[in-house]
Length: 160
Image (cartoon, rainbow, N blue to C red; front, top):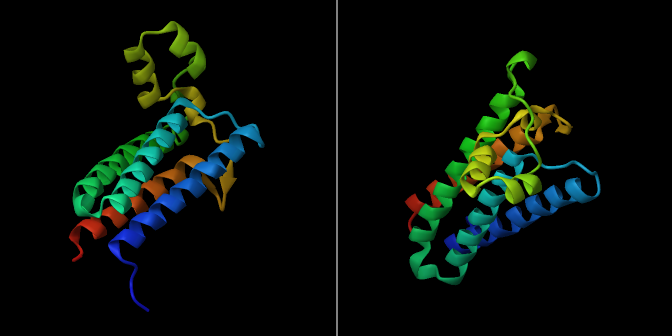
């Protein structure tokens, strides 16, 4: 069986991210799991990955540029998910205090402070309210970003 082409691989990434984002929205609106600031930041990185992969599908001539941008997005997502996993494994007395909700921060705080909180996370990000096979959503997200980074490294090093 032949490996998928570069264009097919990018299309598979788009479909996979749509599936992941659909499940994230399902957990938010049907399971009522409110996303923390780091979760929202990770969603933004997933959207960037899918956007660059879609651009690579549509504009095949620049697939390396879009691949590099998607790889950078996956790396940012790995850092954000890694921070969440780190917070989740801190002893309870070392977990930072929970901050206000994102909507309140956007209305009240300057944008720079809101963005800093989104990338740093707070005590809400340390809560584990969902697991699958013993891993939290943050750990699964870290695995997903790592897998996407590996796909884009493979895409950038393979022959067209």
